[in-house]
Image 1 (cartoon, rainbow, N blue to C red):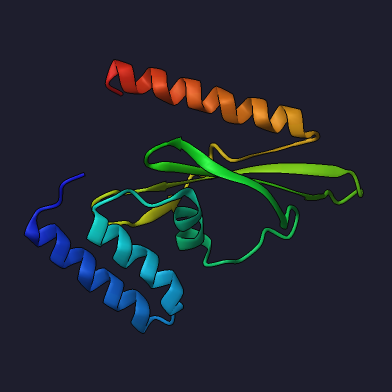
Image 2 (image 1 turned 90 degrees about the horizontal axis):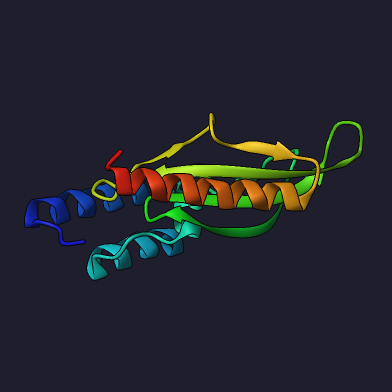
Length: 137
């Protein structure tokens, strides 16, 4: 990703604003490094940016993070449902690569009764999004 000088200035301003809002310095360093390297954010940086470290009360235990595509990250987490049964959640967050603004994809995030179903869903999303990219959607 190659950024124009104006885009770099906008990102620097956003980083300074985030620091003023109380985000930890370690957190902001990831964005500063991404800006310096002109590299995409990692899955962990995307998820953290959206949720600021907060845990889902139903599935608080993170199992895996990764990317569906360069601009969509997923988190697979586990916990107990209201009836005490195992629950596996897939949370999706998109990032705008130019502004680094994130958006939770609530309509695509899902909960499953077992880990295999959750991982199959992640793999399905990867296939669908790759196919849509080839089609230009």
